[in-house]
Amino acid sequence: MTHASAQHEHDRSVHHSHSSPKGIYLISPSGAVADPPRVEMARARLAELGFRTVLDRAALAIHERFAGTDTQRLAGIARALVQRQPIVMATRGGYGLSRLLSRIDWNAVADSGKIFIGQSDFTAFNLALLARTGACSYAGPTAIFDFGVKKPDALTVDLFLETMRGELEILGFESPDSDPVDARGILWGGNLAMVASLVGTPYLPKIRGGILFFEDISEHPFRVERMLTQLWHAGVLARQKAIVLGSFTDYRLAAIDNGFDLSSVVRWLRQTVKVPVVTGLPYGHVKVKATLPIGRKVGIATEAGMAHLVFEEHF
Amino acid sequence: MTHASAQHEHDRSVHHSHSSPKGIYLISPSGAVADPPRVEMARARLAELGFRTVLDRAALAIHERFAGTDTQRLAGIARALVQRQPIVMATRGGYGLSRLLSRIDWNAVADSGKIFIGQSDFTAFNLALLARTGACSYAGPTAIFDFGVKKPDALTVDLFLETMRGELEILGFESPDSDPVDARGILWGGNLAMVASLVGTPYLPKIRGGILFFEDISEHPFRVERMLTQLWHAGVLARQKAIVLGSFTDYRLAAIDNGFDLSSVVRWLRQTVKVPVVTGLPYGHVKVKATLPIGRKVGIATEAGMAHLVFEEHF
Image: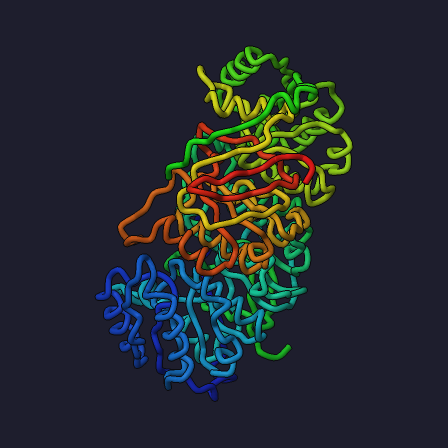
């Protein structure tokens, strides 16, 4: 899948008073870090951007495919709440948060006032926090994937920095085949497999009139459709004001698909659910990704082949 | 994964009065039939077993990866309700029932009195029928997979025939590491991915004190665990009297799994959910499979390395 190149606009004169959080605490709540030098590379890149970083002492632990035992990963999350750095970033995604959800003190997470950010498996954290407390956290870069490289993507970095500074007001992106929409609502979503895996549990936020976004990797379009069908049958999709699609990457079609593809799924979605579908969100398992506030009220509008997510804090 | 060889015991003298349904209507509610000669082979094998078969006129239709458009597959299901053969069998699984669930007249399905049987994607049919009407249907062989071969598995055939005759009283199978259990409850479940995909929707039966069984194919153990976690967090697992595991086949572990395997998942399941786990059910995407009544009250008991499912109709 391709995705549109993102633009971003802001007016520094309006928001110059925002202070910029400059410390990042790195935790590994999901998959094991297979290549520790990439964490060091990420720390070097983040240092170049002006961030001090502190690595949780269990962030490089390994147990089976996980970054430590459940107890170790839970302890890392608990330590993140009481240390001094304002931002808490996941080193990577993978799999591991699902089975921890009932053992995390979500009120303590919310009360910590930290800025939590991650993606993929981290969607479970974003949504459980929102469901249990209403607190906002971020879907966006992870240390290894986005910063543990020689040259981080410039736009991803800019969007991260400006979002952390509270300066990003509008994210515009090419969206040539979006349905017309001009709405406001709570922004939520993330990795589709993780969102679907929370349906029917206490960790899926009950959001009406929201702006719901999805991305995924290595999921065949029939699986994407089956997950969307679950959200449809559960009544989740029809309650939203817009469904926003990021990148769906790295899946393989087979001869038996016989023309069935992700575009068939999007067509089916539009026929089935009477909610505007917006495509082209720069988000997913791709280099160029926005930093998105999960649980914050945003605006969304399409016009002339572009879509705009509006992050002004007060509507 | 290995599975135990199944045994079956019955006393024909007790049940000789049962009449035997001898006509099968074949429908394709899910994936396209890629190899029509295998349907003919299945019909030949079923004829050798004394069954007349009638092929629905859309059973070989193809649309994208599906056995016809949604309208065609829905029409096939509707025709199955009003034709004369007592058994309605799916030609195969695949993917396709999920998005039809809200367009099927479940009361008409239940009122038809037909004996529905299939597996894999057909789990959505079994469970939606049970959820919407309380009616029983069967998880078991499909035409192509189990009969569209030169020599159908003898035990699978016997279990199918005896179940259709209402003669099978007890299904015993080797289960050396099962938890001790002696319980009665509604038998339900099927393909784990399909069961999980129904959580939070109107198509998951609300069953307390049930005997819940699972199988799956091509699902990595971390996905199996994530699906079980969804059922756990949704409160489904804790309400059951037993969790019964069939075969989990055709997945690939990677170096990063680092010792994590299906056995890790079963261990985690036992630690997490205080419900007896029974292993070794002869059911799944494997040659030897039982024919199981979804929605019927059954007994389950373990003793001396064996597990027994008891199908007597009146407790």
